[in-house]
Each structure stands twice: as structure tokens, then as C-alpha cells.
Image (cartoon, rainbow, N blue to C red; front, side):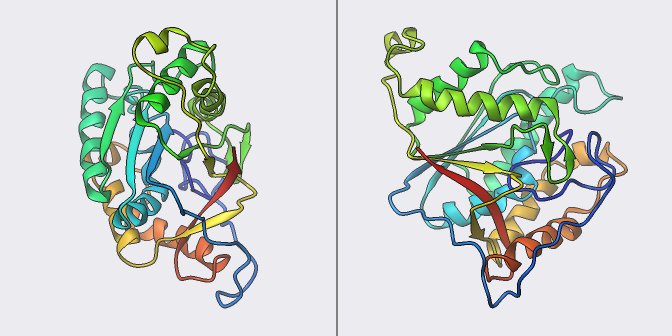
Length: 270
């Protein structure tokens, strides 16, 4: 993961592409919530679209654990294998290893399915090829809710990473493409009929609108899902301990939701 990930209000200290470490604080006591809980009425299927293995594990996977525990089907779409993520290891070795670790991370939080595409890590471009890949998966999985990454140049933790921006922006456009029968017409030939997504969630957004309570078991499973990337994290000696920095981050989110721990997102009705 160069940079930060969905739902994450701050990057890990020393993370490439991040600003100097700083603590994001939210005003208001836990007894006076400032944001509402994310509405999940009518949501049976969620598709999470991110750039790399581990992008979901920096907090957002705790929200996924809460959803799957409630019976929601959650699937991940990764646009790359993250093969460029370790500067000292050949991409031919890193890519398969990271995909295996992502599968293990998915199992921890109850993800129903993982799709890893072969777009090149580090050089994602928000163009038609990426949009078509995402639109096809949306039509195939037919989610009511899609979660993706902040596509702005700046994020709460500093300058955003290039692949994250490309993934988020392409996902936004692909949601519209998936509902338009005259865009990517060949998808119809593959039996992929248009599908309208009900709402979009953006993680790592500087102006969140809703939160997900991850207190207790969801948080524990979220932490364990990041720890499942053991070989990758071992190659990053500067990386903070998941069991230390993730609870600190979710506690900040909890303060604005009126709970002990929460993940925050911006929700767009579609």
C-alpha cells in the first residue's frame, strides 16, 4: 500500500507519499455524536474497489467485518497485484505473495469473493480500460453499495498516492458506465446487463458524512486482517504495529459517532 487506504483518517508514520506524521483529532465527546450511523437498510451486497492488496486493511476491513457479521455479502475488487510494493523484491515474487496474503485477509473478515486484476501496479491510469474492468465487475456482482478510495490530490494524511487516485476516480465513472447500456456495449454480449448502484462510499475523505461502529469483534478482526499481510509488512521496517495504530485511528472516528471505535466514510446517494 503506498499511501493510505479507504476509511483511514491518517497515514502510517513514515509511509511513502505521506505528509509528516500528524494526529487527526475530532471535536466532541463520545456522548454527543456528530455524524450519523451509515444506513444499511436494503443493502445485501457490497463491492469494494481498491488499487492494491492491503488497501482495505487500514481500517475499512473492520467495517467489512461488521457488515458480514450482519449477513451482508461483501466482495473485493483489486485492480493490481501490488507487485511494485517492495523495492527490494522482484515483482514476479511480490505479486503472487501479496495476492495470497490478501486472500487470507479476506477470510478473516468474512469476504465472500476476491478478484485481483492484472493492471500494472504503480502506473494505473484513470482511463477507459480501467473503467471497463470495474464496470464489468459491478454488472457481474450487482452491489447496492460500492466502496472506493479518495481520488483527490490531497487527503487528510497528506498527498494522495497515484494508484489510489486512479482507482477512486475510475470507480466513480465506472458506476455510471455500469448503468448505461450504450457504454461498453460488448459487456452485454458477455451477459452483463446494466446495473444501477444505490450509493457510493469513499474512504479517507476529509469530509465524512457517516460512520460504522466497529467496536469489539469487528475491530479485532480488522486488525487481524492487516496482520495477515505478514510477509509484506515484514519488508517494511518502518511500519507501525497494526494492533497499536488502528485502534488509535478508530477511536478518533468513534468520538464523532458516539461509540468507542468507528470508521468514517463519505456517502453519495446515486
